[in-house]
Image (cartoon, rainbow, N blue to C red; front, side, top):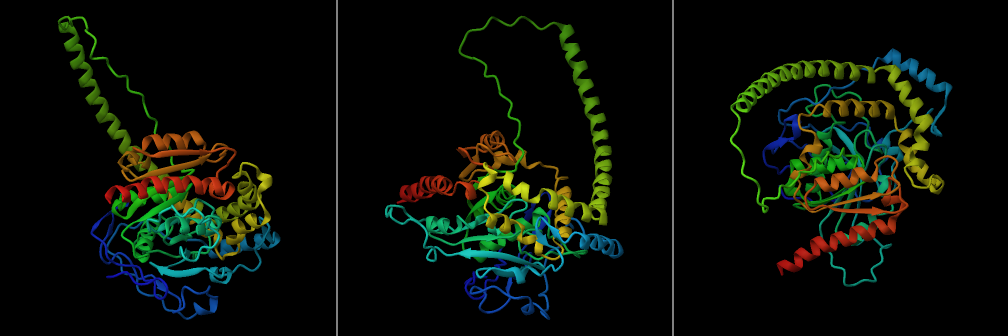
Length: 469
């Protein structure tokens, strides 16, 4: 199916080859993507109010058979009622009124866009390169490659976090830049009941599928993925599942546990060594005995590992049940109320530089109905995803596309040394560190960040296009 113009009817392309999606064995076939439907014909011109959604029948979701990733939470209504009673006693959370929570579309900005993907209304924004007016175009020598870019926010963030760099990036790439809110964050709809769904909307697999579909929607064979913090996890997983769709990866303060790289001692084969004496027969017997013990130990360890997997599965289910309880709902409200604003401030190198409009942008999603339940479901999905047999850190060496890693030297959340280790684990990646910067380089040090991205873009894509000519 040919890509349709996103100005009028931005349907997701269903064109895809049959392959496995991640360790969840989720099959992606020609029918894996449901149509991403706009809410009206003037989809790209304005935000949508809640009444436009009323009475709308959901389009059927066509999915190939796949392993179910998680399940919807069985939240007890009486217990939730008790939680809401407690909520009324405290009318605000992190300074946000909780008395009248709204549907996401009622909180949309003028340039907000909504589309339906597999039963979830995804909030996103698109910036066209010809719309940008704040970019310095004085350097006429800069060439535009024309590759679109997809921005993936981190935990607790949203499309808002890319506000300062979206237009400049569109001017830099000479193409469209798209940012979307992953489920549980921003203004994307909060799904409470998804029992029977083939894909948990809060899982990593869903985010990967949504990213692939947005690239198809942009009408491009591939795109540059830019992920911040936990968004880097989505970007890397996306590459590992569909490398042919990723032109490059830009990872900002990646929340990826860096592998421990052991140093190998190189033997000097050039120097002459003394002749090796004949091996003692006792040593040969001893080595055979040790090999036998090693095999027995491996069998025993395997048995305990299988027992551990069973225990871990029971533990994960129990933990998921706790996270879906009314007590967890009240606790998440207390945590966000107590630490929400301070977490945003501490993400900056200098917390005093965080303006009120930044705090409002980060706390705006707290006005969305069921925000706390969605956040808990996201945590449950993280537990499910963490049972993967192949940790992401062990697959970083498989990445072969151009990679840029940017971090701040004063990052309190993801230390700069971890980002550097991640860079060393990815062959040929580039590592840049910004001084006097915290966890949000694209918000705190905008000009330096854009300068680094521009140099990377020019050296990789412009150099390649010049060499081909």
